[in-house]
Image (cartoon, rainbow, N blue to C red; front, side):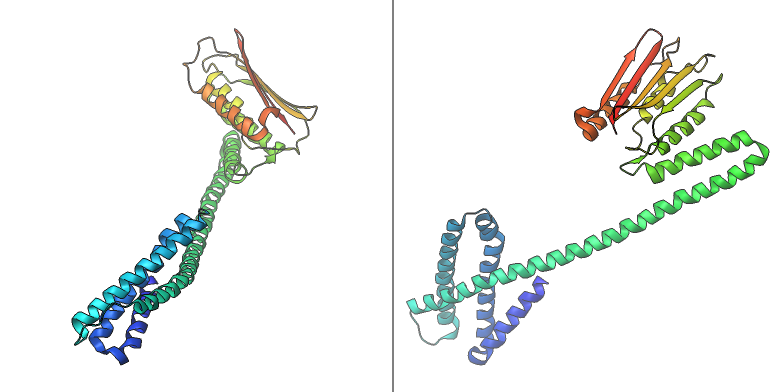
Amino acid sequence: MQILVWAAIFLINFFSLLPMDGLLQSIAYTILNTFFYAVIIYGNINFLFPRLYLRKKIGWYIIVSLLLLAAIGVLKAYIAQVVYNAWFSNKYYPFELKSIIYVTVGTAVVFILSFVFRIALAYFVLKQQAQQMLEQKSLVELNLLKSQVQPHFLFNTLNNIYYEAFREAPRTALLIGRLSEIMRYFVDESPKERVALSTEIQFLENYIALEKIRIRHGVDVTFRTECHKDYLIPPMLLMTFVENIFKHGIDRSGTENKVTLSLAEKDGYLIFQTENELPETPIVASPQGFGLKNLQKRLNLLYGSNAELNTCKSDRSFYALIKIPL
């Protein structure tokens, strides 16, 4: 776009000089004029305006601009006189003050027009950015539609497998159904800022059901809920405790694994407590603390000092508590 603008300026200048000065002289003065126009315009919009005016140095901006115009006026008038005497005149013409004044007034007009040029550039840049944003938005929407189609295709496939498995192995079919619900939770619910407490409870129950099949001798899980299930809470907030239990608090070779989960409402707070017996053979140290640290950071971001997270370990049991305002 700028190339087209400068080409238009060059041609307009050239054809305005051609009737009076002839071909070669018109070309020489057009090149000279266009060069100094560019120095004035880009010197203002790329250097003086952003580095002085936009930084509230208005006094310096005026002084430096006047000095620039004066210097360019003198230099342009001098070069034009030298070029004319050297190639286009049969006699020598002296360098006069009126030539400097005439050229300087012209540079002042170009300086003022540089603001129009700057506005035009800003307009086209904004227009280009807006077009890019529209294209990116369209791409994001397309990717979102793709990301929704793929999981839902998988859900439909799992449902088909569920109905087929239900005739041969009902227990396996129920587990496939729970897996489908967990995946649907991750796709549809986890991106939200808040989810219904009932949805979060169902997610935990599905997760527990799938984890229990990995335990050779089973695990006794008691999950008590004493709260209204229509409250809204951040998704995946209660998951860390349950995940840690099955990762670090279950003896997979033991026969008496017990886990107690309690979700209660008290004085405007939701209290989630877990208790699990520790395995006789300690599991190798792992990222358990890392998950709790991340949970603590998340609580701080969501609730500040209004949330509470506590853990306690005895000889045989591990306790955890999370308390958040409703």
